Every structure is written in C-alpha cells, then in structure tokens.
Length: 48
Image (cartoon, rainbow, N blue to C red; front, side, top):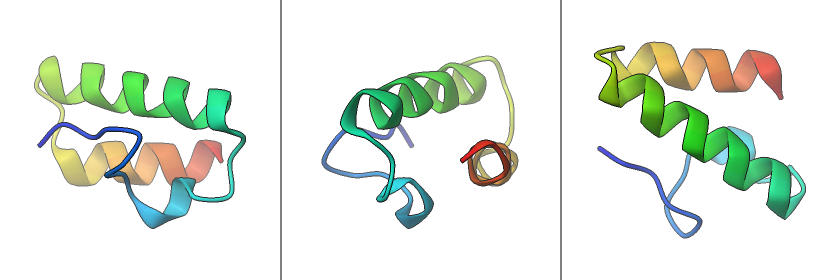
C-alpha cells in the first residue's frame, strides 16, 4: 500500500508538512524495495 499526503500512518500526523512528505517518500521507497509495510511503519515511528 502506498501512502500519500492524504493517507498516512497516524504517527506522522504531528510532523511538519515537508518532513511528512519526505517520510512518506522514504516509506514508499522501502516498500518498493521489498520491505514489509509493518517494518516501514516501525522505522517511520522511530525516526519521528
């Protein structure tokens, strides 16, 4: 599942818009490279 600026994990809601966009881009790239979506959510929460 790809995330967008309108559909993303709640852990990203308090980020600045530009930072949120970058985090979404990174998470989508990780999923595209074969990472499990659950692991990308964990990675994004830990970086936030």
